Length: 424
Image 1: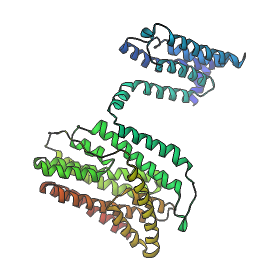
Image 2: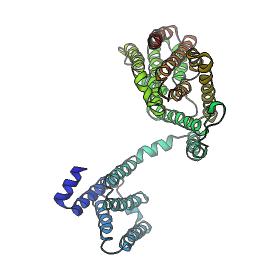
Image 3: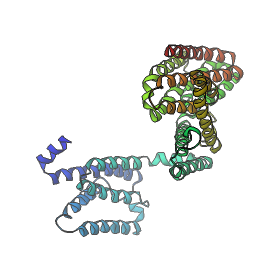
């Protein structure tokens, strides 16, 4: 902030604003010039955009000396000029799309923002606009590969997050005021969003990129699904047991940073209690993966079928599971004390770690039970590791079961030791 003021005093406020406006125009104009060279058409580039930004800045400055109509008329004339250009007979020369026209209008508005003193906001907006413009090819590729089910899933997610969630009552109901519709809806949206992102990372980054990369990305969605898929494949191709074992282990390692993200969202104070155990457990899985992959350079293509990116029944089912665990945690603690919480964690971990983790994060919001909550979360992860080992043992090759058993056994032992130490 002080640097801006010093520069402004040195060269003058007006010239400083002109330079910022010119820089904004150059940022957007450079991208448009490059796009114009590729497509061999277009009318605005690295010179036009800075001029439009400076024009917006200058007219906005002159408003104080003359009339606001000067800026309104100037803005209207720009839009009229662009409309005429777009409807001219030489569209083949100027380009068919509206993107450049809209970018010019946005650049004019950014110049006005600089005049109003919103320098950082204007530059940040320019960077976002350039990012959107430069990702055109990527967007087209993604859209061409999106299925109708994925499109409908995105629409359903938008409806839930933007149309349903804001209208849920933010009030508590039921016994001991445990139920809050808005809170439950928010949790469903957050977890669904994480699954949504993970699904498309697998689809557009991890698919056919190798067992390990696919497992890492698949772990963002469901490490249990990865274990189920890879265990079956290891039985079909025993010679790849090491690779599939490494995939199952690294996918499970992703569970810990995923739960840490939930902790950051719902109760950041607990991070200092789970950082060490989560770090150790993740490190054990990573080391095991590296040892298994050390002398193996073959990377066969693989895909994980993870179903619909947003299964409404699963989303609603997660909400019910969360509510069930919420009551289970509350009444277990009331009638059985700490032991009841561990029983709940062991049972909940058989199906899912997210719900019990979020429940414990909310349970420890008062700050007095953070240590207990962290131990219960670790217990849930141990339970979940046992489930995935059971899947691997039943569906995988003997070698896969052995490797996964060693890694998960180490994780379980470390987790139990941490719980015992934390309870003393």
